[in-house]
Image 1 (cartoon, rainbow, N blue to C red):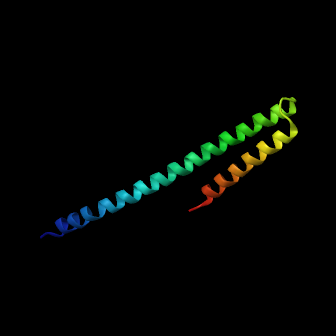
Image 2: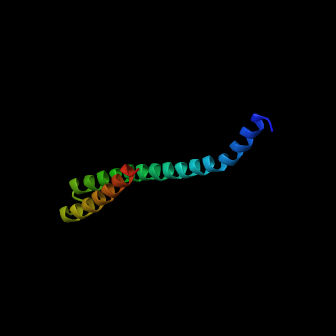
Length: 84
């Protein structure tokens, strides 16, 4: 069997492994992108609630509770984004 044929045959066996690695990486990238989008949404939400509190539409205690919840979610997302 010529060398080229042997290399082609051995490469065919490796392709599914490389493809599955790419799929795993793509899935990971999609998760991180989703986490980044969610973080941006939470920051916008927090800003809107803060504006509502400044305008007197939201009690200060309610604002603190909402801000604490959003900050906890943002921290969880940040940790998720930092994970390898």
